[in-house]
Image 1: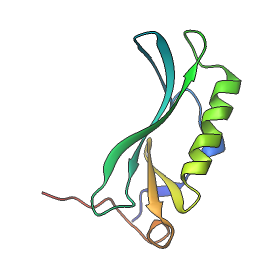
Image 2: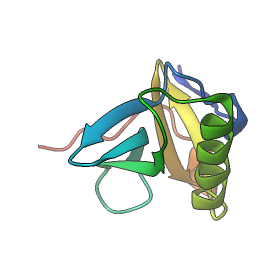
Image 3: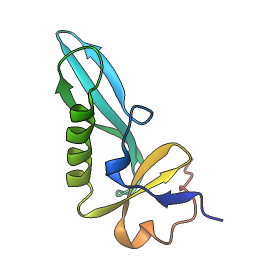
Image 4: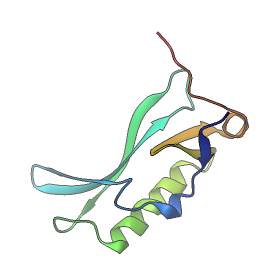
Length: 100
């Protein structure tokens, strides 16, 4: 049984994004697992925002970046973890690869 479901980058909200303050900047980050390579890697897509919290405009801008990042791949979500998978693999994959 597959735990992966289709993920639409337009549905990014505050539950999937993180606000991080580092030095003099505030970042809105979207953490995900990149499964397009030989081994899955934890990655994130981010942008600098104004203020201490993300606005709707910030989330829309982040969604645009996420869409652009996944143009040659397919976004899926497993429970609350977004995955970027190769198109051919994304529709048939049933579970993440566990490697020792």
